[in-house]
Length: 160
Image (cartoon, rainbow, N blue to C red; front, side):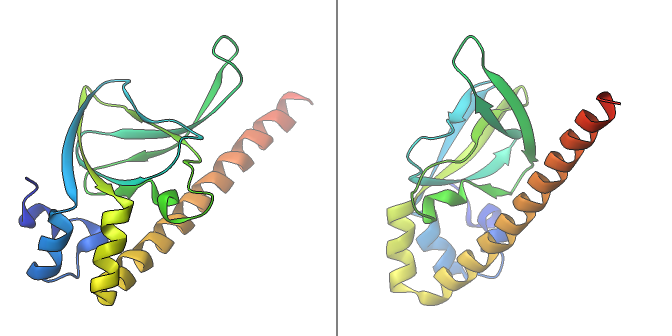
């Protein structure tokens, strides 16, 4: 079971009290991954939010078929960061793929429907979690814009 001490260190849950953290704790499970294990795939139905306990996670776009697949790394998650926020946004599909980027990862998986039930019982929890996730979305879009600008800049420079 995930400790309350760890949960209170996670940015998304930082301002919650022990009773609220306990409700979140009941929705969580810990899963281990090895290097290069895929946590979820771009396009999969997004029914979980994830929090990194230990290790590193890489979020990347994937396009093409298996043989002609091209990957582009967009973000790295570090300990106590939440990712997979698209589980709360229609059409409820992961926009990126998540991979274990270190020798091994320990990740907390939280079921969206269980979290929504917690939010329905305690609107303060829902408000605080969703406020944090909006900030995370903004940060990921900034990273995406920077990545696109960098790629376009390199492409333009190589055409000179």
